[in-house]
Length: 330
Image 1 (cartoon, helix red, strand yellow):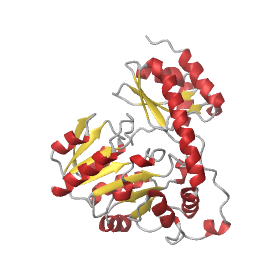
Image 2 (cartoon, helix red, strand yellow):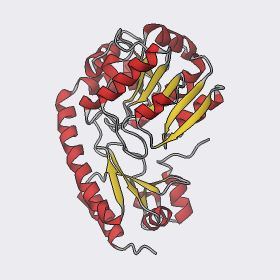
Image 3 (cartoon, helix red, strand yellow):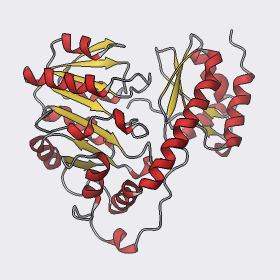
């Protein structure tokens, strides 16, 4: 199993620091989540039903009714490669490492393109192109008009474009989810994560946007009740709460700027609204330094990167600032 952020208990044991003392900045999840209300007891008692309003709320929020709710976008990441013919996949990397593993496990071949722009990926002439936008972990972005043009070019040669938009919610104008599976982009598949922007990763809700036939095959392969009733209800209510969404976007963008400014003296910084990635030769040392002060960040093996999520309050901001000020790189 691949390594991920959020393994706080493991870090607490490794550094012998009590769990309650830690500040977890390793996951890129909104630290101020949507406030989940108490759901009716009947939702816990009945099997989930597809006509409970979740699909309608998601279609309105994402601007696309061609969707399938899944148990977190991770479920779609693992299943999608098994539904498409085996071929070569151009993967713009570094990338969320579950993607290439899933495609390789399904028998596809991966062609890694390091820090590539989409035109270079298209020039690779592979049937599939895969990217995260914004990218995880580097925070690089591909403009939506470039993404749509890439989908058109791939369609001409019978290819598919798969875009993971897990971190795009704070900047919805950057998304291409509304066009996935449409007449304009029938070969475009977009994955969206509910847990990151809404801060509810534990709900395990995500969405796939694609052509109807691909969604039908995915639904058949997943079987019934892939998302629990309480998670569906929480997601339905959160997706409809436009006031909270607008306020959260403003807050996240301001917090992202503050984080980028805080990290800038230590290396090259790129940021999304939910995390900032610091590139520096001493990435492993900085990660260990912060962990020794009960601050968990995301370290990437073989990459000189440290990904840092957003503190949730002023006490947490000061803890991070203080720990950074104490660091003396070798």
